[in-house]
Image 1: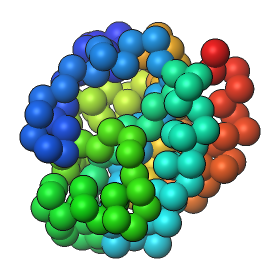
Image 2: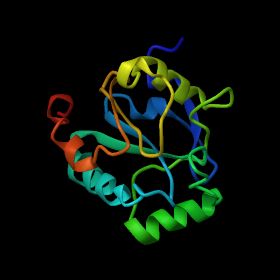
Image 3: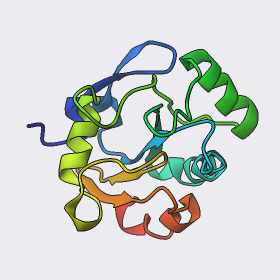
Length: 161
């Protein structure tokens, strides 16, 4: 099994394959997102976090997913437009993926294994589950969907420059 997130590749929302190794040395917050979810307004808080801490080598990575209540029915182009128009999202967004099951993206299989949820649960429970990854590419904490970006900001101090 991979030792850190840098071992993975993922397709950006524009279809370009990206090596996550390009984020080496940065603190990451990896989030499975959806445009039609009760937590969709968290896009604003995620963008605010990204803007506030980006100069301290902090990056938010968004991975749209349609596995929870079919709340991300749009295609990648529509998702990108929605995020930019409604929330001014400028952090990296990736193509829609699955986060649970046999077809889950390898990155999410890794994240689920390395940072289980409450009571050791490995499955992603809902949209906007967040994984904090340290500068070595190791997941250090899983945040629940209802954990706001503002709450997470208070826990970033130990991981930033």
